[in-house]
Image (cartoon, rainbow, N blue to C red; front, side, top):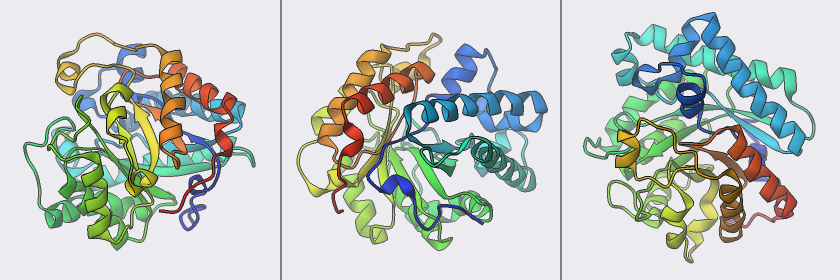
Length: 323
């Protein structure tokens, strides 16, 4: 039975962290080849499982050290049918990989969760296509049907929620939200933004959030921003009730554009302390920002700096505002 599915603790008045750039760590620090950037492929052999286990244990221990909650995002961003097929996974093998990933997160939680550090297990999802380009868009219904496969698998496990990252156009986000609603599991929707603060589709962040809410009866537990540097989007966080729907942030350490990141062969890990300070500034503008972590270029150093900046600023006491 899921522990938190009916009462996600990160929706209350406390700060949660999540991990940094998983693929950044695996590729640049662990020197692991990841075909299709698919971390879930490591689950097929014990050395890979051990690598992933050690990665998540490090963040669980960090959360305990900071006295914060933790959202354990399964390493399944690429574990959907199209990407799985490119790696030789049929439907059965892909479902097994998604279940195994959740099992690993549950194992970490069982070993390290405490009263001060509740740990939420999230089935991590990614886009059907390229996360940086919105050139092959689905209808809402097509996205709902496509992503229902992975969501159904997660819903049948003890995962507490699902979270869709690097969403670059609105129809896919709406389809995923409706599929999560179909399977009665909470969902967080995370949009990625270009250097101009807009989605790759050209939609504004405000438009994306408001339209997704309008077409799903506000079903998403909260929204997030990921795979963009704070300097890319801080200027679009003006006024409006939609800002209160942003509950999470996983920013890039790198200031490079998506196109530049696509072509990069080196690691741009930015400045962890500077990134932590930027999160502190952003949380003052996003009153319900309670889940923090990293994306491209980040690792444990960045997340530690973010957590330090927020906790020392007394940000944990921020009161959540109604939607």
